[in-house]
Length: 280
Ligand SMILES: Nc1nc2c(ncn2[C@@H]2O[C@H](COP(=O)(O)OP(=O)(O)OP(=O)(O)O)[C@@H](O)[C@H]2O)c(=O)[nH]1
Ligand SMILES: [Mg+2]
Image (cartoon, rainbow, N blue to C red):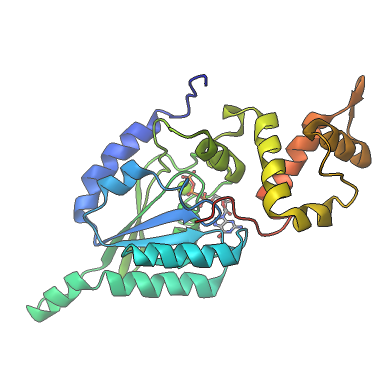
């Protein structure tokens, strides 16, 4: 496989900043994408923060297969991690995260109180790979646009403390990817959910992988949207069929590139239904 460069310069600095700041936080909130909990965990980021209390949040559960998410939560809990799933656009899920984070991080304040000292705001660091919802979570907890959100990987470029309340301070951090990967499937998963730039892997390859994965695991959802497809046909003729049906043409024929691109966008945005790309 040809070498793939996907490690933007600001991530190295972001990594050093995490080492520096992790010392002073009470809690690490690690966000993983519920559709790909394994592929979206950066082992280095985990390692750098492993001595701290941790809350694992599986985000974007509104896009994931909730039955599979429940199994992942059970698995993380069995490994000893406090873990919850969330749709970060849902108020009740945000409240659940705040409640769990507060109870996990209360130890320092209990100590201060027992010595007759004033309690301090809880400090939590929000970490994860790009585009998993770190800045969104902070804005929802703060109930204001304290930090910028964008549906593209690598949007946040530097750390930023956000005072959420007198009781809570959150540190927004830039998404950090592993500098390399051993496994092509992981890279494909990251491209599907938008945690690495689309241009890094060939679009045809991502779309063909998804088509195969859905034919195998979510055939009903695929046929609910594209009832006219013959799934035993070749990938090329399936995308030709979609291009034809939707009127995507280029000079000289059908625009299968556009058919693949639109298919991937619909998949990423949940239009085909709630789909998980990693099972236990
Ligand atoms: N459907 C859905 N979308 C979400 C959820 N959480 C975040 N998003 C969207 O995901 C995109 C990325 O969110 P950000 O909060 O910018 O992600 P980030 O982790 O801060 O990304 P970087 O700064 O690039 O590391 C935005 O379009 C959000 O609206 C969720 O639970 N469900
Ligand atoms: Mg961000």
